[in-house]
Length: 301
Image 1 (cartoon, rainbow, N blue to C red):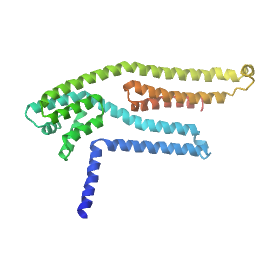
Image 2 (tube, rainbow, N blue to C red):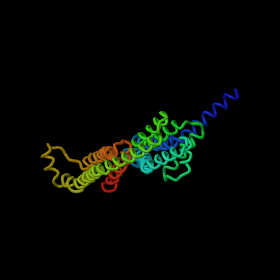
Image 3 (cartoon, rainbow, N blue to C red):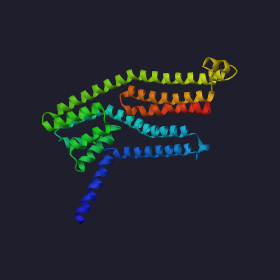
Image 4 (cartoon, rainbow, N blue to C red):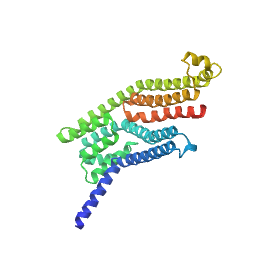
């Protein structure tokens, strides 16, 4: 019975160690923090709707804050993670090339990774040490490399890791395969950098479109709408069928239109940037925040 409990504790500890090494624990903390923050603001929004928080903002403000807190926390994490992965992607071909040199020197694949963990590859050094730790704690090299590919999750690294695993299983000239994989990874990185440079202009266009939309809305609210609801409002009402025009109602429509525009434009900008919907989170945060602040500060919403 005691042995069974000890075995169960070891399994739990091993699972916890695996979560740390694979980076899942950090992501889990960010997701939980995001859910808690969003839930708090959604509860406050519901209380505001019930009239409990009338003096602390409108229900719309709390819904917007829920969106901003979710996209802000998770978006910042994703942004930092993407920057880190980008740096790893740049150095990874050098790591693969050094593995090939170690194999030519007669080292086994495991020893080659252990030896590489002592070197300096910038941001990649930490990831190589995680691979080395997983192997030293009993994981196979294949599992450690697969976990690394899941953590980084880029096309070039997934492709290269797959080639390395297949080469190690086949028992052929692993060093030559590693050289080819290194060149392949470098070429893929160059193609991705070229694609990103080309698509960045579309992201700029989306931001310009958002700012133009916001500027038009502001001009309408500050000049056209007051004129339409002022001294000339009776004539305008006759043209529109006799109904009265309320400036506040028009401003509210523009307000929600701006928030929806910011949300949609942010989604599109992220997809254009690197084809990944998770990259849209930071753009949604920026655009919704700008639109919300513009109406809060300039229009008193």
